Length: 231
Image 1 (tube, one colour):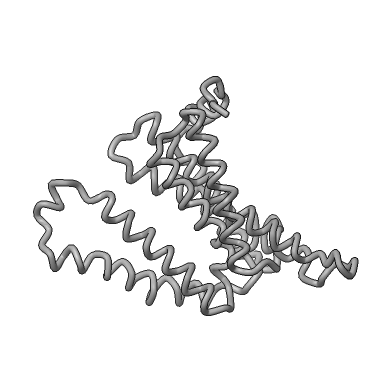
Image 2 (tube, one colour):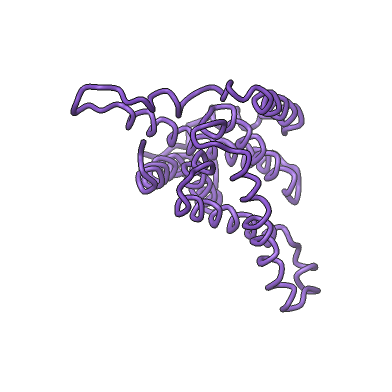
């Protein structure tokens, strides 16, 4: 399979170019483009959240913790900031990091197996819809533009993750010796049907998140119009 640097670099390049295309077409502004680029890079590492490699796992969870901290700080209102003390301002990021490091991570380590459910399209779709839902719910106002950014955020998570799975499958083919490695087919799969209960729970979660997600009509309409694209 592809190594950590390959996953990160290819995902960052591909999603960076994708964000630049959307920016050139005036679908998003610069801040949104940078945000989507960041999410795409994170998505490129997402399937390895079940990794047995402690270094990769540390990096991934540090990125997730940073994302969570930025989420929390981003959506604290100006009025709330004016009332927060210095100690509280330091304690909030530390608390979020502690939850990610000592609560969420051990749970993932316990329930996941490398190249199991996390290396599947179901998992990527769940992560994408969950991201869409979080961005949408945390928006100051539920406007057309906020719905577009929410869907694009989920889309870039999915795109980055899909790149990861494709790279793992590509690296499963040994072109030098003209053979296919035993790992072929374990990365890019619809779901981990060996774990039927977890797959069922994931499917139910996907259907639920899709049902309560914001309408995708405005996003589809926006992405269908490329008249302002400047090459």
